[in-house]
Image (cartoon, rainbow, N blue to C red; front, side, top):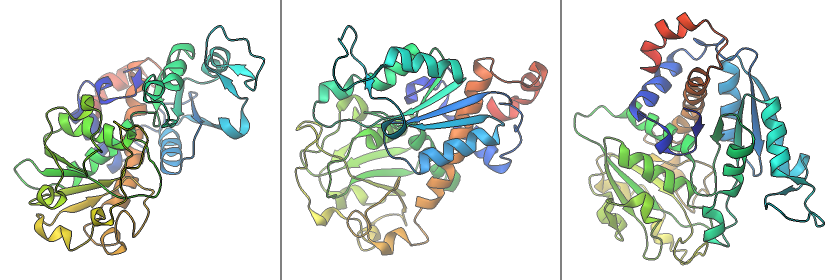
Length: 335
């Protein structure tokens, strides 16, 4: 695995989930795997969990880590080829990404959509430019359309807590918000849930349909209460309109998740990727309840990132450990 940008980069998601959970039991088992290797974390947008969890994941594997907030510490980047750079941009991505690839063995890049032009956002200009010009493995720390590290951690959290013999019912529900938010997290969650062994349902107000490429074949209900019936997991997330791109079509507070609404579920566990607008998206009584998994999800961000970095180190010959070690011992961790 050279790139981790979508669920489609992963050959076996169950293997990656298993590896995450095994690493959680012993985070320092492979503390020499990334010795003398460097992870560059490049942020064009704010981050808390993604930055800290990925940085610690690399450290747990013995890697060096360099972090750069491009919007504050770097030059303004130009992404268009053939342009005459006589404006505000100072450095072309061809040069910047190439140089970062000289300094780093793996690059993690985080960027958000502009939510103005759907066509432009779906080009994934920033992510694809780093993949093209850096010449090293690239991990998406969230892009304009997807957030795979979050979704892997979400699946790890479901696997860790589910004890039933049947497939769990997982519901993704839209929630109100004061801002227009990207579709990256719900898009990714849909991608991963469609490949996972779960019964998956989406519920949102009319007009909030996601890109069908990510939801195809998934039941979509406009009645939140109907969708919640018998649910084992309820994932709460806001997103802006995809069809009327980037717009807020409603702020209906009736869609906020409450303890009362959960009474029709199968004692559902509640999930949210954080940050969360308390008492707007979800009530305090839900977020702070024993059935809330939000902190578990945040914890599992570390082990999900660690499993991904470990896989990339081994897959691309970047490990400093003896070949015989990963041939003989990766079986229980990566098979």
